[in-house]
Image (cartoon, rainbow, N blue to C red; front, side, top):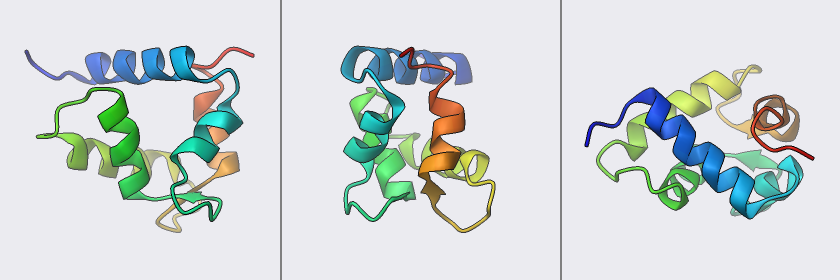
Length: 91
């Protein structure tokens, strides 16, 4: 099975909708060290739970980090995450 961008997005959306009712829940869940920032490893864990192949997790996590990190700090804060997550998690 080919891992397309659309398939990855569907898997992430399914995970978010089935496991969380609010984007903040998802952010806090994946913020492993509870420092208020998501790292590449946090995104890899999110992708693992979304059942994305381990062969591409690192690349996809790097892409997500770069796309979400508008402040270019190397991590994703709550405000950056919320802008993207609100599109997939309905309150």
